[in-house]
Every structure is written in structure tokens, then in C-alpha cells.
Amino acid sequence: MSKFPKGFLWGGATAANQFEGAWQEGGKGMSVFDISTGGTVNTRRRWTPVLEPDTVYPNHDGIDFYHHYKEDIALFAEMGFNTFRMSIAWSRIFPRGDEEEPNEEGLKFYDDVFDELLKYGIEPLVTIYHFETPLYLAQQGGWLNHWMIDRYEKFAKTVLTRYRNKVKYWLTINEINMFMTPFGGAMSAGIFDDKTEYTEQMRYQAEHHLLVASARAVKLCHEICPNAKIGCMVAYGPTYPLTADPADQLAAIQSMEMGCYLPSDVHVRGYYPGYALAYYKNHGLNIVMSDEDLQTLKEGTVDFYSFSYYSTHCITTHKADEGSDDMGMDAGVKNPYLKANDWGWQIDPVGIRIALHSLADRYGDLPLMVVENGIGALDTVEADGSIHDPYRIDYLRQHIAEMGKAVEEGVNLMGYTPWGCIDLVSAGTGEMRKRYGFIYVDKHDDGTGTMARWKKDSFYWYQKVCKSNGEDID
Ligand code: BGP
Image (cartoon, rainbow, N blue to C red):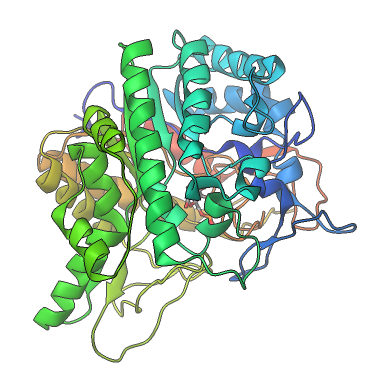
């Protein structure tokens, strides 16, 4: 008997800007990722306000899902997916972000994709907005402005209305807390250089606007699609105290509060937690919130909580080895008990069980869903075309085993969609060689490649997992 409940959602996760390509087709406008070049291992993306000749812009072509969606969905069906997480490119629906009327060609593309998924019995799990801010809106300061909420609401209303009969699972905004990091400055506030400061005041004001926008989408979804479920999406990486010193324990709690629980608590409870309001006050921040905004937060609480989980972090008040990662986030200090991938992301399967318990303790029976998890790795294609990726199978197997234990221990988990089920462009570095997929895509960092799709060993392994409802993970 499987540990996972009947009807558990098994699938994979992607995002429009990282895999669709076709950046100038179907009436699409430009998004912030269209002016971003790739980096190399452990270097971040570079943003070029003006397109440079002879520079590769990896998101322009992505992996060309736009033209390969039928082939890709057939492969997902072959693996046994019953759900597929994808996002809608805002700049495909409202090319500048502020048009009166949506772009019909863009809407039609997603109709076709959803129809194709439903043909195989795969439920679309749709992120309304996954980092892909229309460039024109970002250039005007994006989420620093209250009017951005109206722009997002219009986009959300358009897609919720159009797809109300096709989509049952929605997510409002991907990794809402990532907009707070240095990496988030571009997509949040249109900061494309390293010199302009993305201050705390700006970050928390932007976060407030994002939270109100998210709550408006929840309210709209409840009105327009009463049979659908809508959740938040938070980057959840537990922070451990490095030592047993109570000062480290306190530092870990406070880092989780402001980095992760703030948006989580607002989404689930509908109001700002006391620690956040105190933090603003004690740090001299003046976060403007109207009564109407606060009312919206109250009325827009989510139906389920979804999160990404890749790794854990440590924090200490003592001297220690510093960690780093390619998103330019404060990765805390290295955990001596854990190994890391080539990008410095530490591998911690037990951490996912800790995450699930912490969330269940905090939010009771609210359904949880892991909508991103996986290991970025360098894959090798053998002479015969096979791709052996035991490291990926190991990583996922161990995480699924820990999720299974959490379910047995009473956690209400509704689904699992590992990240980048098909290779796609890295969000943090813009690389192709940082691969996550069960399906290899012949596309490379220098822009070359045939876009052919090949099955990795993990494809056949994950097929067994999906088809046995998580029972057969060996
Ligand atoms: C999350 C994002 C994804 C994704 C993933 C892996 O933060 O929601 O878009 O890309 O991280 O990160 P990366 O692509 O940098 O390896």
C-alpha cells in the first residue's frame, strides 16, 4: 500500500520564461528575462537594458516548448503525470502589461496547451505569474508602485475567466519571497545594474504590493472559478541554528520569520504577523498599507500552501565557513553534515520532512504541496544517446522517501511536482547546463543545439514512481 493518498498529484514543474522560447512570436511583448544573458557556474545572470549584438539571451529560445508542446506533453503522459505545473507568460497576454485588451493569440496558445494536457488526463497546475514581469512595467519601477496591483489583477482576471473550465489548480505568484532578494531587484523593481541599491524599504514595500495582488487573485478565483483551488507559492528553505547556543536558535527563528513566514502567514492568516510590524518599526521602515489593502488580505486567504524546497541553510552568531549560492542570496553558513551540488546548494532530504512538519504545525490541516524540488546537475550524453543520471534519481528518491514519512506522520500533502521535469534555462544563472530534467533537451549555453528531446535514466525511474503512486521508488 502506498503511503501517499489516492489521487495524489504527481507531475513536474516548469515556468513560461524558462522554457517557452518564441519570445517574439504570437504577439508576445518583452519581459525582464528577455534582456538577461546567461552566466556560468556560480555566476549570476547579467541584465542588459539594451540588447547587445553577439550575446546569447537564453530565454529567447528557452527549449522552444512553444513549438514542441505536443511532443513534450506526450512524454509527460508517458511518464504517468496526472498534473503538470506551468505558468502563463504575462507578456504573451498583455505585451506591455497595461493594454486595454488582451492578446488573443497568446490566450489561444494556452488554450491549446491545456487541451493537450486534458486529452491525456493531466490536470494543469497553473502559476499565474512566475518572475516574468513585462519589461515596460518593470522599467517604471514595477512592484514599488501600488498601481502594479491593478495591472496584475487585470491579468489574473483575464486568465482566470478564460480558463475557468480547464484549470482546477492555480498558484498566484511564484516564490513571492524571492522578489525580496538581490536577484529579485530586476523582476520586482526594474533594477538592472549592480550599483542601484534595492533597499529594505523598497523590498518590503514591493512585498506588500505583491501580497495584496496575490490576495486579489485568490478573491477573483473564488468568484470566477468556485470549483478550483488556489494557493500561494513560497520558497521554503529551513534555516538551522549551527550550534546549540540559544543565540543561534533565536537567529534561526528570526531569519525564518522575515525571510519566509512573513509572506506565508499573510497568505494563510490574512493579516500581518506582529513580528513583521515590529520589525518595520524597529528598523525605521514605513511600509504604506491602506485600509483597503488590509481588508483585501483578510478576504484573500489561500486554499492550499505550495512551496519550493531545494536545500536548507545554517545560521550562527559565531565565526564559521560562509556558504554562497548562485542566486546571490545570503546562503548562511555551511552545514558540515551535508554535501552540495556543483552550484553550492546543500542536499538535505530530511529537511523536506522538517519543512512539512513545520508547516503542518503552523497551519494545521491546510493542504500542502511541494511544487518544486530537484537537483541541478551536469549531465553527459553517451555515444549511444543514453543519459545516466543516478545522482538525480538518488536525490529525488531520498526526498520522496522523506515526504512519504511525513505523510505517515500525519502531514496533509496533496502533490509533488519536481522542478524542471524537462531541462530548461536556469532562473538564477541563465545556464542550460544546470539541468534538472527527466528529459534531456539538446540545447547549450552557446545557443547551439537541435532542441531534440531524449529520455534520461531518471525518466524510466520517475515513470515507476508516478504509476505506483509513490510506492515503487527503488
Ligand atoms: C526557483 C524558481 C525556478 C527555478 C528553480 C531552480 O527559485 O522558482 O524558476 O529555476 O528555483 O533554480 P535555478 O534555475 O537557478 O537552478
